[in-house]
Image 1 (cartoon, helix red, strand yellow):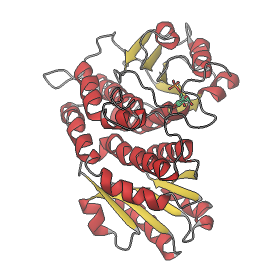
Image 2 (cartoon, helix red, strand yellow):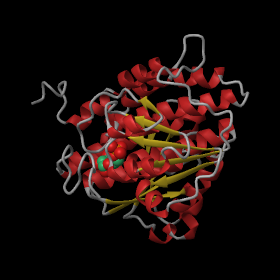
Image 3 (cartoon, rainbow, N blue to C red):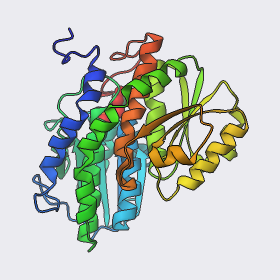
Length: 360
Ligand code: G6P
């Protein structure tokens, strides 16, 4: 009933709404009072690391792809991201100096576990997991819990933002071990729970947009830089629970194919905080609008002023661009949730999907 869901209609709604609180609890675990990082479960030694491979499935793989942007930017270590089903059968070379990071909410996904077993004993392994007693947590050299609490909705929400938070912590820790000053970025990360609360305050606007999205047969998602993985996650959430066909592209790839699909029946959702790449994304938005495309612009106040003519605009709080994927996860989730509600689908138990894929 509604009572166990904290008054919400669905587990997914509850889990979206509790993100400021669980994110704060997660960050409390890893952010030191004096402005640094602590890893209570064991030190991850980045000093000799020259390459990182990150392996996961589904939503967790998009958290990894986001972290690639962070780790490469902050720590200067090259990062490769693979889905576990490809990694395990490709049997890639594990060169000295490589660290492997496995991300899994359940800690039981068969492909991710097999990928971990392939690396184990050959290179250092780190697991980022929600279920601390899981197989992946037990078998990795170090397991870092995301502290999201039990996630029941099949479509992952709070686990995604908490995975991002722990991966942000790892990126900062790697940066510090390479001699970079991290105090400012740590402080900005610490502000994220309050900013997520503000983003949740835009739910009514997002719900109104979602009612229009529910009419669409296809939806495109665009983002640049670290907003590209978030576009992938937004498209995944939408198709998982509303069954609307959705695809995500890096905004710069628009002209290499997907623009052929643009007409007034295909909404194009663009995640565009005002960051260093904003002008580039804005010109992609113009290209879409010039072809009659209906743009749903998810941006901040500055971005909303700089782009005219979007079909719908959702205005998020203005934040440090580095951590924007954490904040923009909220509109991505709420758009998917309310579109599914408008369509009347079973949000918590979407057809054909399992919470945890423990067999191949
Ligand atoms: C399933 C779930 C997804 C999840 C993926 C990976 O597909 O429906 O929400 O992202 O598995 O699961 P894991 O537990 O390894 O994060």
